[in-house]
Amino acid sequence: MAQVRVITWNVNSVKVRLDRLLGVLDRHQPDVVCLQELKAQALPDGLLEGLSARGYHAAVHGQKTYNGVAILSKAEPTEVERGFEGDGGPGDEQARLIGANVGGVRVYSAYFPNGGEVGSDKFTYKLAWMERLRALLDTRHRADEPLILAGDMNVAPFDDDVAFPERWADSTHCVPRVREALQHVEGFGLVDVLHEKHPGGKVYSWWDYRQLAFPKGDGLRIDIVYATAPLAARCVDARVDRDERKGQGASDHAPVIADFEWPA
Image 1 (cartoon, rainbow, N blue to C red):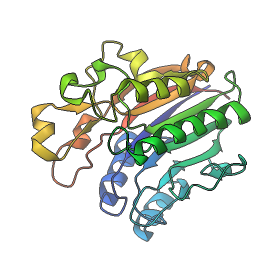
Image 2: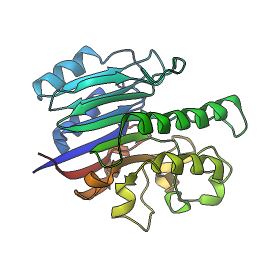
Image 3: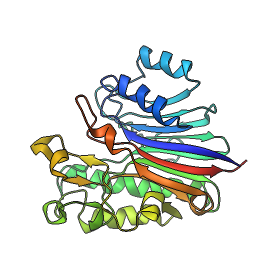
Image 4: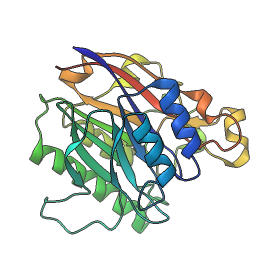
């Protein structure tokens, strides 16, 4: 057994956050990093050089200007799949999901749709996307195998994950229908490891850039590390790097960090 650190982080533009990302790698020394909202088709050269110098490999599913996900890992990722490849359904033009085997564990980095407004076409797409993800898990995996699904889920699972629940009650992050959809994904056999370590909530990962949300403490927990039960049982710590949300040039999301005793 070896201790392995997993980070998920919506960087909100990998080009803008290049130096901050390298700083997170240096500060936390993660073994696996799930990135979301790259807003680029590929990782910039400066980042690729920095990753190589630090011993990281990268698997990327990019998209110009919008979306984009990646898995960075010290062990070379294998059996990489982008989007819903091979599930028999229509192609998804939005780059929101990438999966790879990393050190004997299946890892998915996911950027769930925001959903726009409740009742909109974007909201319908969000719910359908989540249902398709659950179907992918059911078809390709078992709940007793080591698997991690990490990312920006764009859903706050509980009111305790929202600093001001009444303010967000009607949003696409919090309405009952979207929380039920997330519970359906969890129902595959996933454990929210940060919630397990902080069952009282009040731990947030996203603060809107607008209206001074961060200094006002107006946060939501929408970035999640899920693990199947065999791996979740080996999670020794989980937390949010709130300091990374501070200062000029910060993403509106903070990294979520989970430490595991990894299977050999």
